[in-house]
Length: 228
Image (tube, rainbow, N blue to C red; front, side, top):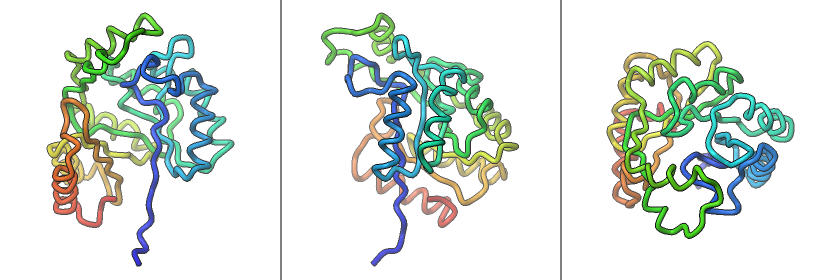
């Protein structure tokens, strides 16, 4: 019998989904805190957190909004708090880093490269939009580039190095694994480290079983036991 432990990470609200897609999407600080606590009770060891403007559910990097739910989660759970540095494709690197700099969490997500980050086909499935910002945000994603250049990644790694923050290295395609390998070779990423392989984003690698195996085999070849 395998003795390998399973680490469950739960992303509570993300940035690509809009309120009109689901009534279950947590938007307010109270809803985000409640969903995080529920996830931890269900077995999630890591809570991956984005913030939303409480008034209309739009993505925000404002530390003041994070400050309304982070203490509640920390007091109620033993889960690892993971603050995004991805924010949203419409945010600057500075906006994406603001909350992580303010709270110096034990973990942050880190996209390991730039990519076309699109979800505009979802607009066809929405008959009525709840808020004025949503339709343009979804439809305009055919022009979004999520930017994380080598310089951006280096900046994020170096900026949070003093806080002892570990990273969830998000890899949306095979090339992102090689980008990670570069930073391992440079000594800016030290083992052991966590890789999250992301499948199915329009602009990234597709959600096919063969792709999963290829990504896993590539990660094993590049990193061996250094990654999990």
